[in-house]
Image 1 (cartoon, rainbow, N blue to C red):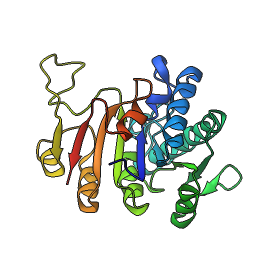
Image 2: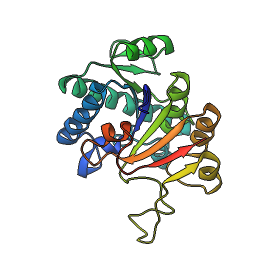
Image 3: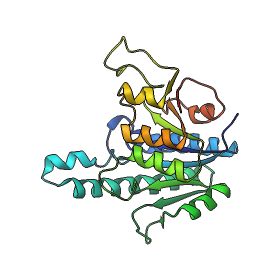
Length: 235
């Protein structure tokens, strides 16, 4: 059965293209087209976007910054990506609204649960920047949090590979892909596709996590239809 409302976790690196840094115009346009097409199929879509294409908080620890300052810079990177996605998705033909957990009203709307729910119910793709608004939390954990509080049934983790593997398939040719896992199995196996806090929060909220490759055009809509290669992590 097609879900009514989902939360997509999109990494910042997914917006960078082959360069791995900043924004790649062609990649951004292609992703926005996929998201817009999926939204037109009637599913309410929220997106939590990372900021690793601009700055990762852990990188700051090697530059003389403390963790709180470094994570704050990383949060700003996520808002930059949210603004870029908002424009690209609207250009692709779907209404969109960027919201930030870190208030910056001159740039975008501040995140509030009821306002986000109103946007979703009115057919807007809601792009959530700023992580949780607090340091020490990854955007994976932020995605699980937003999926739970926005009453989503599924958390879709968009990656560069087509599911969860026993090891990194780009490094280990013998890595085996899982079709299905439970949250407990993902935690006990210490699978690195999401951090443990995100898995635990998703487990407690009863969220189904779907891990799929965003690199293949049209894959988001396919996953929402229950098609294509993906790993399902269930309660």
